[in-house]
Length: 410
Image (cartoon, rainbow, N blue to C red; front, side, top):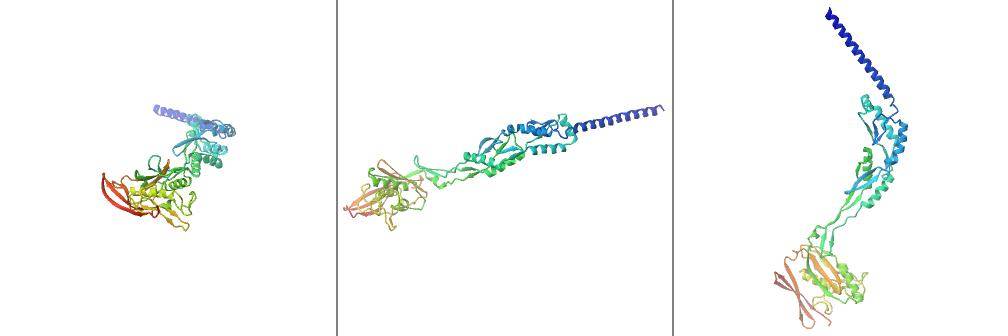
């Protein structure tokens, strides 16, 4: 009987403890519910928008606070990257403004969805509620900012070109770049959606502008031949024509197998820039044709067309001149040569102190180890035979007749 009595007493104690626990729990729940009720229109403790503590603010007061700090927030600097360069802009510069209503409504909705335990943890400070400002964007202002940036970051493509500052060499082209404003606006919009802060780094979009490079021109690395003739620099009309002809052939590239036409390149000699002393020919152009003709001979190239003057020229030996002329009918007396190399030829032409220079540049193997010289032999009073001498390793390996020339005037 004593054991039964003790068992009943223990049960009474247990039920009493259980009852007290239930009453305590119910009391705690009621207390917490009353405490949470206070936050129906107030931000929970430990609520932050970015770095700003909004704890205990009513929604109306929160709106006032955001209005107070918005100018400070909009001066926040963020970084944008484009073409390996970095720039800083304020949110205001990018056309951003805080959407206060959406920001607060978003927090309200989220706070209502929080479960009981999460809310309690925020009240006791063991958990934070972190939110972001929601922004509006003025696309026109953003576009203006990016267009200004475009003026700083855009640069043109530079196509491959010949550098003649020291000899002749071909430089590869360099690509250009253009900021893509529309795509960059989308990038910024996407970043705003994901939230912006001081650590935000936005990559803008740009388009590479491809430069043109002719890889074949990279083979040009050596002077293959040159020739020069003397002129009187103070002879006004002749000097103008001679230098203008030089400027027109300078920079010409003759591809392998291509025929160079002096008339097509420097003519017609009735074009603007020449000074005429006959209806059909510009005084001085023949001297440059002759200089080019001799450079072609010394390069071992094939001569396609060459006509002599009526009388021997003073600036080259007999038989080594080449005349050219343009007629009103459109017909032209021409000088032509063919590029028989496996490589392109670049013609460099200029004058200095009364000397006209024409140089041919190509690959160092273009002449296959051969060198060339010319000679002129007079036959009779007005006749000349010209010869091309071919050399290798200092020894003459061939000599061939270039032409036989008969002048009709003394």
